[in-house]
Amino acid sequence: MDEQKGSKGLAATLVPYTTILLIIVALYVGWTFYSRWRDRKEAQEQADAAQAAQQKKVVDQVFGSGQVKLLNFSISPIRLRRGEAAHLCYGVSNAVSVAIEPHLEDTKPSYNHCLDISPKKNTTYTLTAKDKAGHVETGSLTVTVQ
Image (cartoon, rainbow, N blue to C red):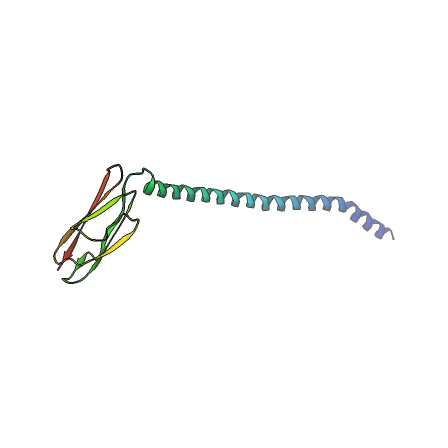
């Protein structure tokens, strides 16, 4: 009977310590989850800020100065056989007029516009875009006809 009394005494003695130990473990686990949540939140905020900065940079490059800007100018394919056609594509921002020499119909200020061309000989196409302040942006490409 004294053994049972001693066992109960030991269990009763250990309960406060195990309670304290459980509280410490719960606090540690809670802190771990909170720290990871906070780190993920900070990383997401940094990624969002970097993405916003990149988008702002692109917008500033395209629209920033208010001056005319040649966004793209390409011909595909660049080498043709006589009688074949190619796509001439261009894009401009802040332009009020666009001209391509040798003269092509259907040129207009656009962020992305494509035309079909069928040159009969080697031809250099020159795009000239102007803005309302008179600034000019030009680009040239040559198509080789075999």
